[in-house]
Amino acid sequence: MNETQQINSTLGTTEIIWNLDDLYPGPGSDAFTGDCSWCETEAAAIEAAYRGRVKTLHGQELLALVKRIEDLEACLGRLATFAFLNFTTRVDNEEAGALQQRIHELADRCSTRLIFFELEWNKVSKKRAGELLGEPCLATYRHYLASLRRYHPHQLREAEEKLLLELRSVGRSSWNTLFDKIIGTMRFGSRGRTEEEVLSDLYHPDRETRHQAADDLTAGLQSHSHILTHIFNTLAADKMISDRLRRYPAWISARNLDNQVADATVATLVDAVVERYDIVARYYRLKAALIGLDSLVDYDRYAPLPALPTLSIDWARCRDIVLDSFAGFSPKLRDAAGRFFTERWIHAPLSAGKRGGAFAHPATPAVHPYVLVNYAGTLRDVSTVAHELGHGVHQLLAADRGYFNSDTPLVLAETASVFAELLVFKAQVALLDKPQERRAFICQKLESIFATVFRQVAMNRFERLVHEGRRQKGELSSTELGDYWMDTQQEMFGDSVQLRDDYRIWWSYIPHFLATPGYVYAYAFGELLVLALYNRYLEQGPAFIDEYFCLLAAGGSATPAELLKPFAIDLDDPHFWQQGLQVIDAMLAEVEGI
Image 1: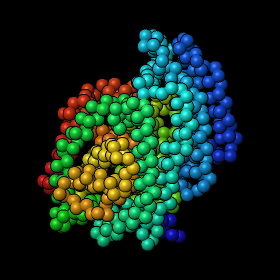
Image 2 (image 1 turned 180 degrees about the horizontal axis):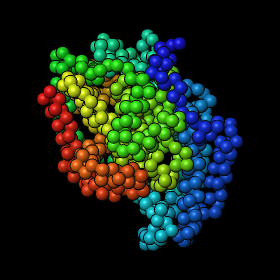
Image 3 (image 1 turned 180 degrees about the vertical axis):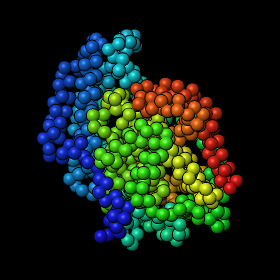
Image 4 (image 1 turned 90 degrees about the vertical axis):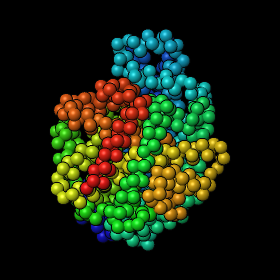
């Protein structure tokens, strides 16, 4: 039994493996191959029946078309979910990689046939579209159809759209798959450990262990820096070309349009967070004193405070902590999250070839979400489980809206996950009587909030420099990327943390930059929103709970602004974001006062 297997055995995660049979019995099953064939046939049939006719359709005819497209997209989503989940736990497996690529190509072929619908629908006159959207039979799809029209200024001609779709499976998706394979198969240090095992050591109480983990991560990333730099440049150029062709005014505009928020709203959020970078520097100066150091080096950022319990939390105890915390808010939340444990919707053990990090995948409303974590038994891992289960419950509750309307905009997608983390934190801190333990525990939560708010905004500013630099200078060197990374990270830390030269390569293992460019500010959005919502919960008590579940169950059936109307939140008001930042400031003041 190797070191990783021993960890899994001790924590009780060896058998915590998801059951993909709920999607398909296997890639060779009749159900899987049958759905692949049906998607090809149905896409061709839809194109043959409706291409060139969208502007002539009446309400019921348009409804029939949208339902057929939704059914097809849901089937493709089911196939893609199976292929992705099958691949993500064994990125070093050639057959799993080939299956994912095959489904990418199938989806792109079907999308190529269906592209006519969006193009033709957006050419329907404003008056006629308004009449159709007002018909009762289309009420369920009103927001979906109205939202499609926001892309009209950025659409190309049909032949061009088809060409881009044809090339997509060998373009962005393939480069992201290559990145996953490189990081997933990379081994670090003399013991040949996985990325997750090395990153976990950055939270170790022994400073030399942290130092060694940082050195191991740096060495591993540097050994592949030429490939990782090329991947980043290629995908930045891919986005540059797409944005230019589609006439997006800024590198972030496409993401904001997808999120249904204005560029100005995001700028207000980012500016508000940057203005409070002083909180970060203030905390880390305090932390240096608390752990007995004159100053912190980059590998000291996550060092636990001496009073923080360092016990290893096995999987059964993690489950109880999370579900008991959820029950304190609502039995409905506990019961929904409990299904992930009892019905095998989670993949928890560490393993070679498994993708790092954690996620919740919504799959399709007809099935259920799946959660992946790399569980190493730390308090941080318990929070991660709570976070991903929050996502999962959100996706589960929104499923009744259907495939199109259950897809929550990214800026609200973090709401339930961050709220779930906060519930677990509040339940745990209430049990701590000793001031030093309470302080250490609050500090750990502060660091988690920093990672969600300040670090993500710093990464957003790094992304901006990368995309603007790629457009202005051309191919960026690893040195230039490292400069962007160091500048935006040091801006956040101020003089509170010394960033060694080794740290300049640490941009290169973060998948969000590649898979969903511009995404990271959604974390800060979600965290600050949740801090405001949680304060409202404390004020309103049980009355808040029903409104909260209504928000989750709404999925993506309206814009973020519309979904938040019951809470009287103005996303364009800097004061709203400052309220959340003041909550963080108050938490730090509590630590300073202990």
